[in-house]
Length: 521
Image 1 (cartoon, rainbow, N blue to C red):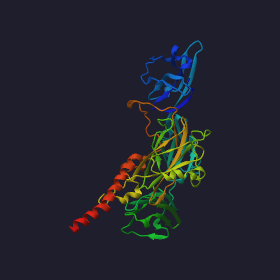
Image 2 (image 1 turned 60 degrees about the vertical axis):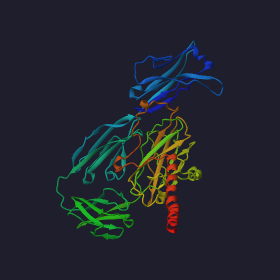
Image 3 (image 1 turned 120 degrees about the horizontal axis):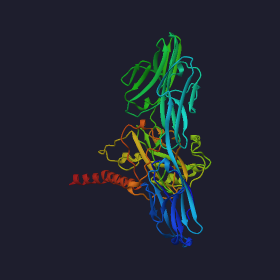
Image 4 (image 1 turned 30 degrees about the vertical axis):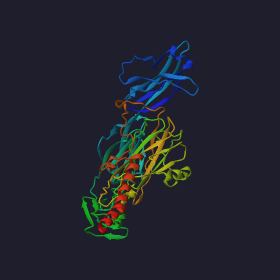
């Protein structure tokens, strides 16, 4: 009989629990039954339960390498719910009953159920602040507090825990505090609380203090960019902007705006020379403060948007989205088997400049065939990697688009999406992946680690029984501002690229010869 297994399935998906028996067990003489605890779900080929989401799936008879004939009935559960969690028993009724037990665990995305205060809190200077955030999900979500456009009052980037305590409120404690609940299933859930610290006395003098709204601003050649500094101080500070050490004035290229304590530098038509480091400097009679910003032409971080659970036992179609104002030239995808000792909530942060070491650096065969559209992986503790070229509207890699005739207009897109088929993966295994993208300005930083799993058996689904797993990756929808770039498979690429080259050959060789012949005539 099939061995019992534990299945961890995302809520809303479809799961098939296997039960195969072979002829040596004289299966034809006995009744195969599915039970959940003591409740009988099926008997033989008869479905007993009235649950419409459960059905029997006969196992197609086939002979194994030892010559035994395998038969049986698998149990399919569609649109799994929390109430479906538990043990499922496949039993053969005989003098000595034989049975296997499958355990079904339902993975539930995180949801913030309680946050206090719910929206905003006004607190007097010197008073304690207590923020509380609680979430549900399976596995139990990890709750992290962060601060919008600023570090936490203790100087750290974030704080872990359901409760955030600030012993003594001051002006620096004001701001938007964000609670994020994440259990690596689906999208993280977030809520915000605005803390407003009230001062008992009016302070007429205060040295300048600067908060940078966004340390790195992504833009592209020919586009507009806006750098923003939030400036505090009394009397109102004067603000000047620098690019490196050069002070910027108001020109057709650069304009400066301010609304309240928000000061902006607007670059109307970004050029290559505008890419770089900027400083906003605020000063009044009591002192100065500076804020550092960077205008980058690199792609933003990539965000995975594929479901966390594959439909197959040895393959997985992984996809991601990235924003870039310059055409993407290629991607670099890293993946590996997740360590068996790694907890689902453990978020590993390997050093980016060491990720190419060991086996990842030696996989030169992956670089020799970057257009394959898929890659085989046997897994291991080291990172496997593959370089994948981005495709343009003509089906060719972007670094070949100049081969297209001049009368064919190239239309770049800001939002790019790519998918890739990983093959020869291990069944019923957990994997993790990271990806980065390169445009004309260089490589962006590696994405966060994304977790996905393969099944123990391929799913054979009807069109109406597709797993309802949507948005399981970590996609930041705020980065998406235009249409998708087409996802192109390997075969489509070869056909389209061949057509593009054929057009180029006609344009560059055959047409000039024809015109020369006509001129002679």
